[in-house]
View 1 (cartoon, one colour):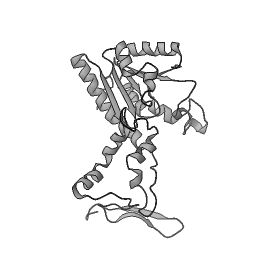
View 2 (tube, rainbow, N blue to C red):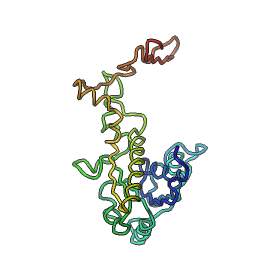
View 3 (cartoon, helix red, strand yellow):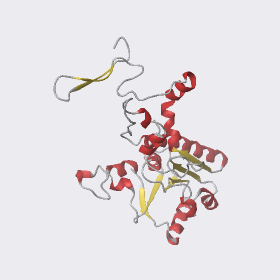
Length: 262
């Protein structure tokens, strides 16, 4: 386990929002970095107004979703549409070692806070952008949350019964895969900067990160030309495996047997 102060002295200006980017900032903060989370009072972000709320009482400072993604950070609000707000933001960039953002491609450039602009302020800045499909390509402006990413990556197609339509996943799948790739490459970027004195720009596609978790299905197609399909509660490798009805009204038992010994 990494020592708690491994990132002590590292400063982060966290412009990212919702889940993926904030989780990376949280991990840096957990291990000693000083992280300032920049928000807007004009447009409170989704996690602040999302359940669960403490004691079941809604409130902009009561969401467990927001708190879990922003532990150990400082917070401030800026109106980046105003010159004075952007001036403060540029001072934060000059202060920071790392800048994070997770807006639709082009948004930070319009504010004068994209990587090229920030590099003029701080030449050795480590800057990461995280979006659904990355900064370039024909679908780079595709925006959404982890459920949309899971559908785009093919997970919804594989979820549900074979004779019924696909089922959207119950969690925001890519939101909880992509951050760990980002954590790894941010550490590598800091090491690179330490060795060379140069900064880096990191471009994360959340959907591409999510796809890595169904590698067996991709390999099965490449090697055997088998196309993965929905199996309901079944499993291609375990038997018996599934949810089976019991006596009584809506009573079930789940069985999963992986080996003859089991």
